[in-house]
Image: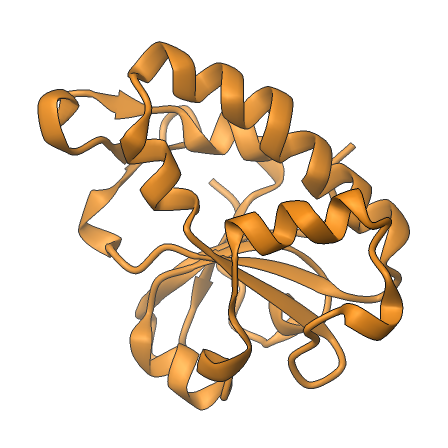
Length: 166
């Protein structure tokens, strides 16, 4: 397992997942969070700088990934995240310089960390609530070994961060 990230580099670069509401409030991001659909639209438009919903000129925050994951079957969700979401993440980090991409997924209790494998899974809901989905493998394209826990200075787990995926 990697050392925890206790500074705020995740607010300026990399690919992160955030679930701590207090941190979201301190980040003053609530009014600028975009939907997953809007994120896909920005991708289709080629990441137009004039249209980018930057937070503090250094981050874009997206909500709705968790909702879409829960709407699909376990088999569908792996393919969808690997084929649809990952390609857009990769395009974002290649096209939008010096900017963080942050996914807001508010339910910390649905995260499952397997420290021995350095992996992160998401507990599904509805008919599939006894199953989990390898979200870390899918959104970071197997680069889970580079993922760090975002922690407060008091050691509270706030989210996950990866500097750059390939």
